Amino acid sequence: MTLSPAAELHVHIEGTLEPELIYELAERNGIDLPYADLDDLRARYEFDDLQSFLDLYYANMQVLVTAQDFTDLALAYLHRAAQANVVRAELFFDPQAHLVRGVELSTVMEGLGAAIKRSPSETGVEAALIACFLRDRPPAEAVEVLSELIAMGAPIIGIGLDSAERDYPPRLFKEVFDLAAEHGLHRVAHAGEEGPADYIREALDVLGVERVDHGVRCLEDPDLVERLVRDQVPLTVCPLSNVRLKGVARMEEHPLKRMLELGLNVSIHSDDPAYFGGYLDDNVTAVRDALGLTPEDLETLAANSLASAFR
Ligand code: ES4
Ligand code: ZN
Image (cartoon, rainbow, N blue to C red; front, side, top):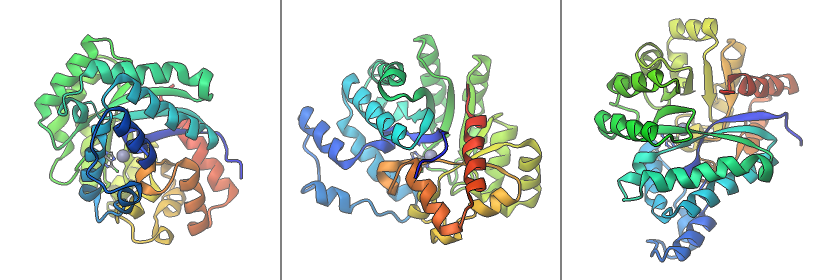
């Protein structure tokens, strides 16, 4: 099936690290992996919730060491995205997750910067970078890291907020979002994935975000839904992620169709495709089959993604 052209607006580049590439990079960098073999690693891709996934996601990043590693990771993803008819990809990355391991910001930016530069000619996908800050790290550290990114002229179009959501309300990160705004950077945040609907409202009101990543728990708050519909706030929904992290019990119960019917500005994305069982096309076919989405629904979802892109 050929899908309509779409924009991938919610993908963590570190979450595109496939088990095979983990082994390849470990070998290249002389790193001993704590797994018996590739199958042992693959068997660990079963999660109970967001935190159980994040534990493996952060552990596997240890194989990313050189600028070349980051370039290879991003280009491998962009080639795969092209197969799903992605024409524009706005890639999240987690600078703090690399800094805490002793990998310099300049290494990360050199590697990812080279990939987005080469992508149009090598993969046909136009790519951009969004630096995400970890809500389970100190807010002051986020300000420090964004200041460094700005000072070095890093090729980022915006900032986001990710990692463990519960008990880390968006308002804690007002300062870094204000700094981003002062520098003309776009702003997005994960909210309403595991956290309450109120975090979505806070992300809009306190952080000034232009898109909400996930946002599915808005459905618990009718007044918020009304506002999101009225303002057509983009919600970047990741169906396979929601099922694999057990926010939604089965794909048949995913609220995406209901969200479309309510008039919310939703689009489909892949989050951490190497961990959650598939890329953008896999997400689209999974929800289509489980929820009986029509060709018109799919067209609306793809059009929403393109309209919500920062370009
Ligand atoms: C993430 Cl699924 C998800 N949620 C929050 N933070 C993340 N970082 C990478 N994947
Ligand atoms: Zn995400």
